[in-house]
Image 1 (cartoon, rainbow, N blue to C red):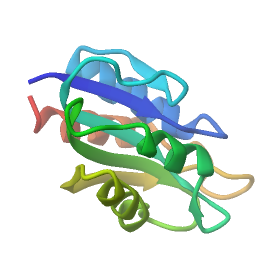
Image 2: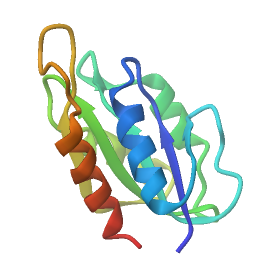
Image 3: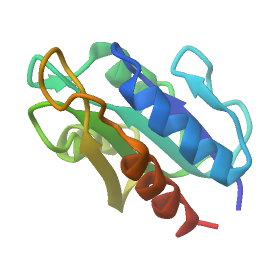
Image 4: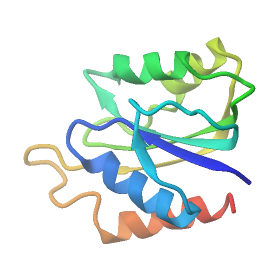
Amino acid sequence: MKFAVRFYTKTGNTKKLAEAIANELGVQALPLSEPVTEPVDYLFLGNSFYAFTIDAEVRNFIQTLSKDKVGKIVNFGSAALLNSTYKKVKAEAQKVGIELDEKEFHCKGEFKALHKGRPNENDIKAAIEFARQYK
């Protein structure tokens, strides 16, 4: 299996998860500014809710993807308030004809006074276990 990990973060929380997942999969976690240039079976896409939706950078990145480069997208992320960006990412992925894997990883993320220290060591371990399913 070939993997890629891309992420978008404003606070650094999702980057922590991306780096743990990428390390487990033997690849580098890269920001969305780095395009997927080689074909991959799974693209792990880290993101979060900002103002109750996914950031425009995430939508724009998904629009650059093609079925000949990406087999499936695997959604992961963290958020302080809302739980999952799955439906938003799926809607964008469908526009470019790429399937979103039915499994995703999500944990709480620190934001101001909420969820101090998250993602924590247990969250990172859970993200690694999640990635292991794909090896």
